[in-house]
Amino acid sequence: MDATNTLFILSDQHTRAGLGCYGGPATTPHLDRLARRGTRFDTAYSNCPICVPVRASLATGMWVHQAGYWDNAFPYDGRLPSWHQRLRHQGVHIDSIGKLHFSRSEDDHGFTHEVEPLHVVDGIGDVLGCLREDGPLRKKRSGILEAGPGDSTYLQYDRRNADNAVAWLGQHAEDERPWAAMLSFVCPHPPYICPPAWYEHYADRDLPMPPQWRQEDWPDHPVIDHFRRFFDFHPQFEEAEIRQLLAAYYGACSFLDAQIGRVLQQLQDLGLTDRTRIIYSSDHGEHLGGRGIYGKFSMYDESAAIPLIAAGPDVPHGHVCRTPTSLVDIHPSMLESAGATRPEEDAGLPGRSLWTIASNPDAPRTVLSEYHAVGSRHACYMLRDERYKYNYYVGAPAQLFDLQTDPQELHDLAADPKQTPLLAEYEARLRRILDPEATDARARADQAALIASRGGEAAVRARGAFDNSPAPGEAPAFRQH
Image (cartoon, rainbow, N blue to C red; front, side, top):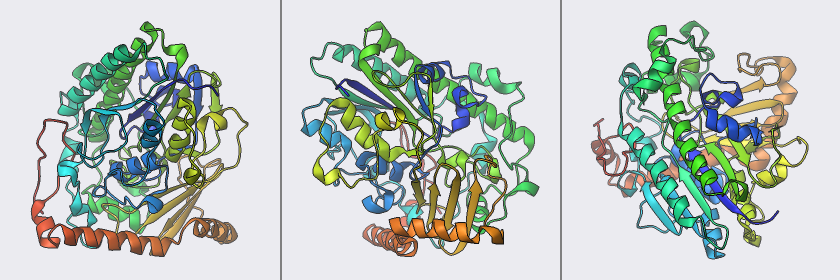
């Protein structure tokens, strides 16, 4: 593969159903067109369904338990090598534009430049989430009831991110060497607000309701029930309230698509389309009320599955790839596309090049996701291969779903005695990767040490929490607990 310009576009909390090319109801013509001229990966997953740790995993190419960036108070700080560091050290110009959710601008994350980055609050993040056993409940109910049309600092920020990307491309159109860039939008992450025109586009449509949205259909599992109660999602919202949220969320997806369309048009206008590889993905999904949850946090596909599209030179056109993939695959993909050498010390990383995966027949593979963050008392782990999804919960029953026959994950097979051998096989596969109990203990110990370093539990509680990381120039709105 010849080195060429490489643009990695990342969004935040973009569920697969938020794209038309995945069969969703969202109007996303620009991303759909990108998929038609490239490869769409249909079995792609986040390595941790919450922002900060998965962005550290994406940067380092490591599983979360390898890197040790556990939750939203452990932002990537440049301490471990990232693909951006590797590219810059080999002379590739690598800039970031937009949200990173790393530590702070003063730290060297490996980019040549960071253009208007969004980092964690105070360089610290959400330390309150480290209180795993008896952390204060997060009241997210009002944010769901307030979903609708309007404006927000996130919409404003993403307009600027597109503006900055268009300007950046103009500045680098004549670069002699291939460049790399990471363009990161914050939409459609809550608040569930979208421009009025896009809200009206969806408001009167019969949008499909998410799986198991009715309370009588909610899956009966202690971990999922705890998420619902912890974030104040219990009892069920009214159907009209959920539909209002769906219209606002899909409107934000269409708004995001329009901003990406502006950037793709600039590539075309500058004659760079045929000389630029593009990867599009998101850090995790969004439940939209499925299973009685809003946001991310779980291993259900609404939360853990992600869109993943690649296009450009040497990428198969109009192709759908079903080999399981995940965000750790970005690391080797960016190095290969930009013509950088993979150092020997990176040989043990779990990711594989998306370019190689896309150009070969669908193949057996297992990807890992894990969760050690806010709303969970103990760790959750997911293994996903070409057919099954296995969820292991420390201190709670496992789950097993056959995604070929049950793509909406409505029938948990774990209670079926006939599946006992299969459950044992998947647990053994997980334990070959990590010790789930020991990893849980290590995460909780690191979180306890972080709380102590910030003045102890009383000080952390007094600092409070905030619903969303503020856009650049915006002050965080702390709430006391």
